[in-house]
Image (cartoon, rainbow, N blue to C red; front, side, top):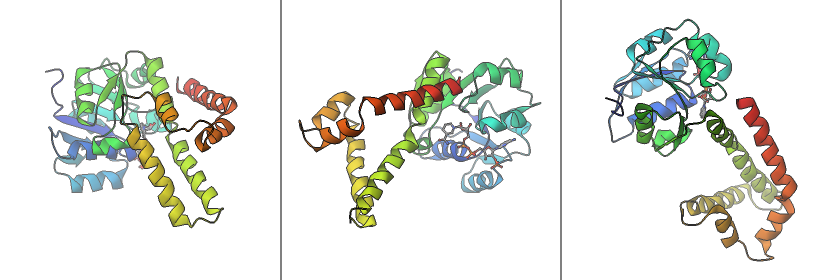
Length: 259
Ligand SMILES: NC(=O)C1=CN([C@@H]2O[C@H](COP(=O)(O)OP(=O)(O)OC[C@H]3O[C@@H](n4cnc5c(N)ncnc54)[C@H](OP(=O)(O)O)[C@@H]3O)[C@@H](O)[C@H]2O)C=CC1
């Protein structure tokens, strides 16, 4: 029945995100479907199948499809033609496309199928069932699957979905920002260990404050800032209008490539 937990799930492309999905499915609690993995990404696939009961490596991508109700396609965008060309996808399957920048129409042409195709953005934290996954369009079976992995956020419009996808492109910039702070600190006589520990601690607290959903983001910023104080000084000196505009321009550029 629609919305029921999936019993057999296939993954074509067992890399970072494919592995995170398997680990999330196998972490404690809830229903645990049988999992069928593609042969490529052989080392990761073998490791997962040795680690978890009910996780098997198939001999070919077609076998993954044939044995599954829901198939997650998680190869890199540039590999998807080679990975998918010639596969037969019956209309009773459900295809979940997690590849950034591969539109549903494009994938439907490649797969030549009438099966439902749902785009999704699972992030590595699905392995701890702590990531909200954007899906497009909403599908009861797929949304139930991602609910199990930390939450589903279905959107109807693929352009809106792409804007969410662009947002996920900002994560490593955030880590690089923290690394820059640390390196600045070590240049000013702070021992690397102390700089690392202190910067992590500062931003772990920022992360925790984000859990307070009663305060909008601009309010959180204002609440952490003394008028004419140090935070206001750095924010206005560095994250000024030009910097904010440059960030939005980079996001616009990414978004147009994702379409
Ligand atoms: N990493 C992330 O946080 C996120 C990634 N995504 C998307 O997920 C997709 C995968 O990303 P990620 O997991 O990081 O990438 P990885 O490079 O870690 O994994 C891709 C996997 O695809 C395998 N592969 C390549 N060709 C084939 C083929 N012909 N048949 C089957 N498998 C094949 C690779 O195998 P081999 O090692 O043998 O080459 C590899 O294991 C991308 O399209 C990305 O946009 C989406 C959301 C988040």
